[in-house]
Length: 142
Picture 1: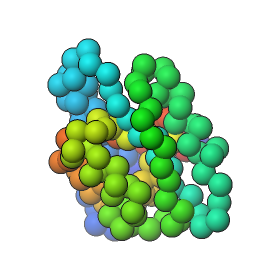
Picture 2: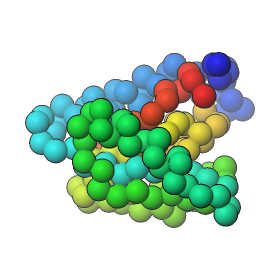
Picture 3: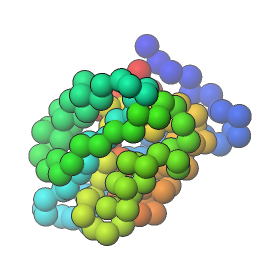
Picture 4: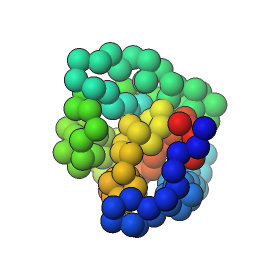
């Protein structure tokens, strides 16, 4: 089943464009690392009180398939809030900025945001910190 690729309220980007932004940032980081270990965090977003174990496990397949090193697993249990306000996502971005991590792996874009504009802002933040976001399911699948 496909998600809508239409524009959100701010009308900034389609799902295909967002996928291209995410993949471009990932490729740039991987080229920069050229054969060195790729250190990633597994990240999930869950509702308050929800167990994050299943969502975090979904990202492990990407880590294993790519041969990356999962350094830490983190989750926010805030439900669908603005990614900029989530404490654990912010900590992961700080770790990327410090060079302790190279990227974040999440099950799907819904772990970041269902809104195109907020998702694009989060991608930009992660990229600006020097890292990338990888997803177990791309932006065009649920």
